[in-house]
Image (cartoon, rainbow over all chains, first blue to last red; front, side, top):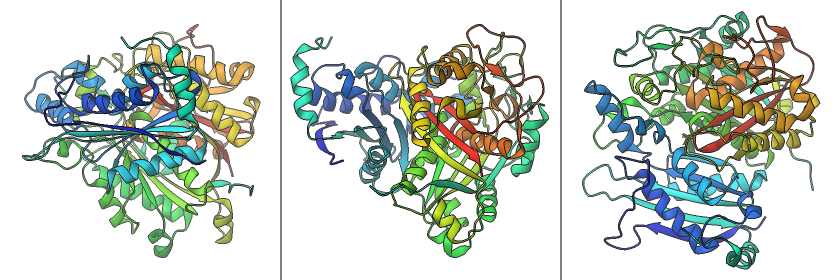
Length: 184
Length: 374
């Protein structure tokens, strides 16, 4: 299949771009950053959620991160090392799948879910993972998410989203957009 | 369109609380005796649950991975030259040392890169971290790389050793069984228990294996993956996503539900998870679901998180090759939400057909792998 970039977005998109917290996610920027980039990308292409069911059923998600959620892992380690009880919310966000679950539930994306830590060029490898899903045939489109979490002085959190899929989806998405419920 | 290559498994390796090697995994799961005990590897006195299935002593993830990958390469007959050209996919849990290292570059540490160097393979393309479907997702990607002609063979390795952080995290999430046993699909089940696990497989095109006279251990006939789009961490109660993953695996294999002779279920022993998986099996397999023997080997070796999909795939192949299906341990009595033909209280002879290994994870990610003994 000839897949193309249908839409893209990032967070932060400009200096001072605020990070919107996600309900149920605490102490780490990882999941909110991913969600913000992803939702900008999806909204820019499909309009408000959910995605039309026929398209959502064929859309997978790849989340790739060079760092992983270092802040959550460090918060768990700090609690363990000081004998404090681990905050239960950290259990729910302890894996990158969690924010993908938030996104797929909100947007109705029922394709495969893949989460990785690539060793080299994160975006290139995330696209490679997406290409495998498309070649495998379990998805026609993939929301490719990449995130880097700042973990040293001078670094900055950054998340990007790219929707890759067949060119004819652009027409399908625009045609069905007015019939869907407004974003709350 | 040319026919896509068939995928076979030419080598396997495993390590778990039953011992190191595929032999102990086979014998341990067929013994029907769970490997759980009191956690002594680290201080767990702050945890409500202090039970897990552990490899004795102080094992290291890198060592276990190196051993299982070496075992798999040895069985597959991969010499140094073949290893140098064999892509490696790795699935790992977060590294507790990386979580304590200032400015750590990656939560999974450098284990995967060191494994590749130690085993004479190219640096891994990526580490799969998708929770309990990480390893099975890597297997599906390996199979796709082979069927699309990207590679003749791909090594997949996965490892998880229980550590203080994961025990505390799952304890805080109230996910662990409070009575010292994992009881998948049983009345009175109260949750999961963690278990050490590492495994490796060499996936290969049937033609490439035949060309070098390598004996397949199993045929990887089908694989499928699908999402629930339901919740951050809970499974979809009607099992729709898991059922679509199973359906995709059957379609890819050209198999019917009645061709499945055994299901090694995700079966974590959690009340909601097992009920959702039972619904998924009925949705995907129809009337055959009530007749297909089901067990979850997690009831014996524990839940190996990111490695679970590969440990359980190897356990499934070993059971099919032995002609005996492992028990679903810990069973106390039927639960009407889980109307399945569970293998208990003793192992059962296997009929001919496919083994189906099912895994589900946080974020509503589901995978299904369909294998037959070669």
